[in-house]
Length: 118
Image (cartoon, rainbow, N blue to C red; front, side):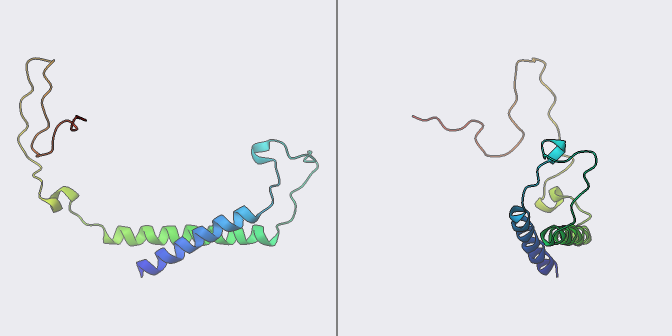
């Protein structure tokens, strides 16, 4: 079920992007420009594209909320660290008395520095 909602969500997102890009720019974004927009001017009636944009936006929000509910239902009570086997109560080494000494990270076999370009 989650895959179906996810596919619908992606299709809605792509369609919403396309519909928004098809609309004519009316100017006046953030109150800038938009000639003829005096204090007596009213909003023009919604076009079919504007209504489609609102409908797609509402459907996009609904599918977003639905996917959030699905993710919350599948969340586990355990930590990711518990799943990979990392001990939470690992001993922490005492800090060095010399503040200029930088200790390497605890554990791990990875190199501390990237290899040289020789």
